[in-house]
Amino acid sequence: MLRGTFLFLSFWLSANGIQSAAEPSQPRWVSPAESPFLADEGKCLLRWELPESENSSFTFQVEQADESNFSNARVRYEGPDSATYISGLPEGMHHYRVRLVSDDETGPWSESMEIKVEFVSRQLVIILLLLGSIVFVATVWAIWKGHCQYDGPPASNSNTGGRQ
Amino acid sequence: MSEADANPILNPTIGWVLLLLFGAAWIGLGIYWGRRAKSFDGFMLAGRNVGMALGSATAMATWVTSNTVMLAPVFALEKGVWGMLAYSTASFGLLLFAPLSARIRQLIPKGYTSGDFMRLRYGKLAWVLFLLITVVYSLAWLVSMGTAGGKLLQTLSGIPYVNGMSMILFVCVVYTLFGGLYAVIGTDFIQSIIILIGVVLVGRLVLLKTDMAEVYQSMERHQPSLINALMPVALLSLFNNMFFGFGEVFHNNVWWSRAYAMRKDVAPKAFFVSGLLWFPIPIAAGFIALSASALGINVIDPNTVGPLVASSVLGKSGAILVFVVVFCSLASSIDSLLAATSDLLVEDVGRKMLGVGGSEDQLRTFSKLVICGLGMLTWILCAREMNLLEILFLSGPLVASAIWPVLGGLYWEKASSAGAVLAMITGSVVGLVAYYKLGWYTASLISAAVSMVVMLVFASFQRQAFDWETISKASN
Image (cartoon, rainbow over all chains, first blue to last red):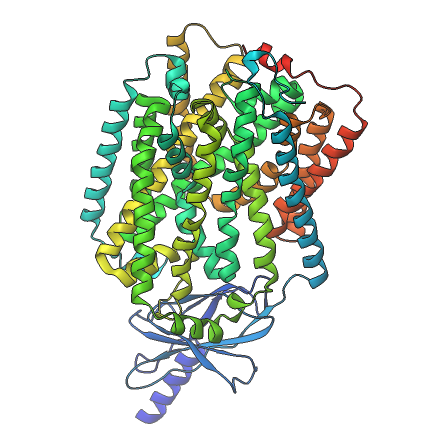
């Protein structure tokens, strides 16, 4: 009877998203708001949370992997904070998951968060770099030419034109 | 909230003591130096007699803002080595302003503001448009510094954001109010020395306590794009930041007022030296962010990564050092911007546009009211904790569109008013479109390019040459 009541309560708590204090809960992602998230600069803020009833004295472990099955996972962060800022990611799809860890036990992994890094196209980069080089050279040239042309007597001598 | 917000490295009492100590010092020194400002000219332009040491120190200190100390590490954290260099390219603006300052002094030796030049060179429409751009930019710059300062003090010492931000603004408004440009330049000299020593010291100490091989390995494993020489965003930000810097320096009255305030032969040398001194600062301030991953420091808010790493590695003494450097860099830029923007509003909007004027005493009173008003407006915007850093970057294409109108106006007889107006409008519009469609790292570059083409096309069709003497006659 007691066992039956316990199982029923466990089922009910679990079904309503409430877990017992002994069992670590599953963190859920807060940021990015959607998965997969497109990061065109190879950076993003990962933020997660626990159900409100949990207290905050936990250690989290965040793993990163290139494969969706986390076969090549590596720990990206381990500590008490509920967020971490990721930068310097190369192009491609990156997978993240987070869980609670303690000395005694570890909680279940969160759902996977996918970050898709897609930089601006190579052609556009080359065009803009060429454009930038041209404008830079033109700016320096215009100043240099103007300086050489007008590096003359002051305006008070009523010759603001300098050596023209 | 970042890790450091929850556990600030410094005790709030230490933070307040430092804040009050340095605040009292700047106000005292400001009032002391400000006694020399007997005339309106003295108040606005420090008697037009600033020498080499003070001139280069004030230019360098003004350009080291809280954004430099906080954003250079962000650039390093997000874009790696190219990111640090991209931030350093802002020094090219100062280097190139050196010859421009000589021309400015030659054309308008008795000028007051950058607006003066635009009005006399291009007429009313270009002048109004220019004022609009510069006021938007200056306000965004002021508020971004106030916001950054408040957040940093909170991160380092736990001083509540509004209290820290209010105190910084209050100190800067008070000493600018009493001393005008004399006070600004005098305090800038001391602040520049503290900033230089502080940044080099923090960089050196962090370098001594970190293993560079480990840093490299950590980046290779976790942040490989940071050491990728062909990372697109980093490469593009190199040019984008450079043109943003050109636009900021070439158009803004902060730099023009210094060109007018320095002795004629001093200005070009002082700007050149300040550019050279400024170049390594973002690298020294930025590189420490690269070691965050290797040191196991969890970054949550990238905007505070530099101070966070420095204080985590160096402990309380490092946090105190960072606190002092940031407070100096904040003060040295906010005071300059308050003084220069109020000059612009008094001279261009008040005197020239609205006809407010009269005796020197009335003008000085008006100027003080404008400084207070500007301080209040900045405080109100800062208190809302708006994301002004984004607005500051949004102003990038606006100021970049002014590069070529300023250049053409100073050097080309055939630079036309219509060309300048269209260059600023099309450059700004196309740059803003690029900001949203392609990314922030393209906006200033594209704006400068469009503005350049428009100026060149209009100049090639212009028949009548501009008579340079009309400027000097009118300004006299």
